[in-house]
Image (tube, rainbow over all chains, first blue to last red; front, side, top):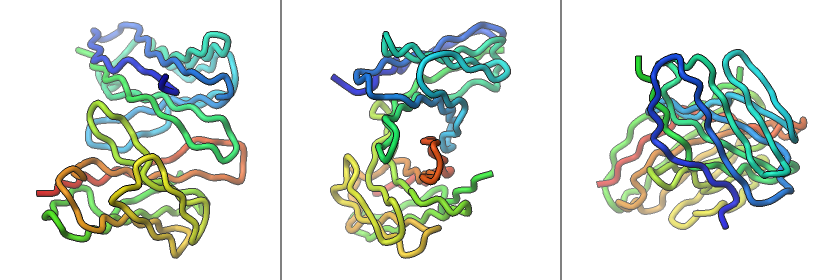
Length: 111
Length: 114
């Protein structure tokens, strides 16, 4: 079983839609959860960072972690064409452990 | 802001050539990483370094080596480039002194081996 699974999409939505991006993971030892956004031909940039279960909100973006289900989500409200990118989830056990990345979901927001 | 720079955005090399990819960061981060990114395979860790002159193999180290002589610079070396090393190469850094585990990425080098 892979450590983290992410639906690759692609996902295409109209401008203004609510977008839900998800990852599942296999090991309950993971405690740190991140979402990265990667525009075409660019490096990934950190979008959201959460520790343990719960929600974290930043403007139109909400990151949600459900450790009991081993499920993490990123919600984008009022999506904009500028949100068109690939979104990668990343998880860590902490300490000196490496980050484990999902394969990314490609999102297109159509004007 | 953390700044991670990579020596080239695009690189074309011939099979058998020795290739050097350079990564430089300006935030005094101890940890540095090299990934490759391929469609359908996602990000795969090649090598990482916890500190100067230290290196650890990642998930796919075959055909690669690294060098870290100074804290701010981490080099990836393709000893004899092959066509299956055509990929996007990404360098990342991480500050290990706090409790944050996020990594900061450079813009990437798209390498084509012909």
